[in-house]
Amino acid sequence: MYSRILGAFIRADLMTPAALDQIFEIARRDRLFQSTPSETFRERTDLPWLDLSNRKITSIPESIGNLTYLTRLNLRENELNSLPESIGKLINLIELDLTCNKFTTLPESLSSLPKLIELIVIGNLLNTLPDSIAHLVNLTTLDLRGNRLEILPSNIVKLSKLTKLDLGHNQLSNLPDNIGNATNLIEVNLNSNRLNSLPENIGNLVNLNKLDLSFNHLTSLPTSLRNLSKLVEINLAGNPLADLSVLQNLPKLKRVKFFSSPIPTRFLLNLPRRYWTKLSDWKPEWLLDEDNVEIRRALIEQLGYEKICEALNAVTIDSWREYTLLKIDGVEKIYDDEEEPIDTEPMVLLKMTCPSTAHIHILRVPPEIDSAEAAITWVNHGIHPDKFATQT
Image 1 (tube, rainbow, N blue to C red):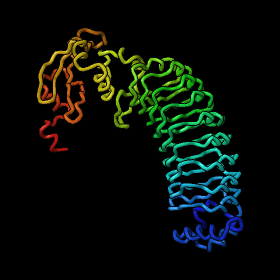
Image 2 (image 1 turned 60 degrees about the vertical axis):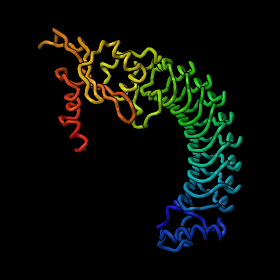
Image 3 (image 1 turned 180 degrees about the vertical axis):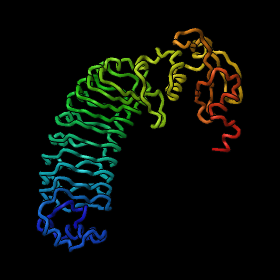
């Protein structure tokens, strides 16, 4: 039996006694060895990965550079703010995880890792990236979420094999003008930054499949976005955008997340294609056949309740507390047994104003209901509002 710390195999002769003692102590403390650590090390001659996560480690010994056979190194959730220069000797390393430490910059020696494919540095204190990061020519995944980056170096596009770039929850106010040269990118996350605009050549990311731009300060989208022919999903929530019409030109786009003001993540619902226009072109009649409650709310907020009532000739039937019952004549068709239209009936809607948020919600109720009190009781499955609060 051997520790998950050690992955599989380790050669004791390649580490200093002090470094071995540190790992032995971790293993003894966690009672992970049945045999003695030294025997375990001598029995195993290949170490594919080393897991030292969540150990409150403050430094890594220089001797780690002797483990040239390492392919995966997990140092997440420690208290590291630097790495020894010898880390650059891990010539076979393909994955390095530095999540949740205290790094303010990345060591230059990382640029000497020729086989590194995945670099994860989530939740640190990075404010800059060294230019030498461009030397990681085999990198496919770079995850820098939750740092303090204000500038993305333009030479990041030299990472020609990069397919996933995650820069969410940083402090970026712009992107390099040449970002479109990183043409192998498939997934890009830029959510929760300070972006005011996007460079026009972002449209050159022809392999992009997923793009998250949520919760920035974007007021417009570049026309070049129409060139992202492989884009399947885009998140634009929490941006003050007024025109989404460029999205109409994207043949594979299936999922669009968008609301004009920040709302809880659980409500970031897919926006149907007919809304991919200028917001000024959204139509009041869409409210009549929109089934999604949150999209109806967004439509009401965008157009205004009064404008919708005026456009649809809505008549107030009754009011009770914060509820208003509305009727729109001639909306619903009545069909005979052969499904031929023979008459029309009104659509009856219940308007509810949320006391805590002042958001307006509109729900459809049966046409025979003629009081707001009866309507909200129907919505509550027959429970009167005065009793509903007690029962829930």
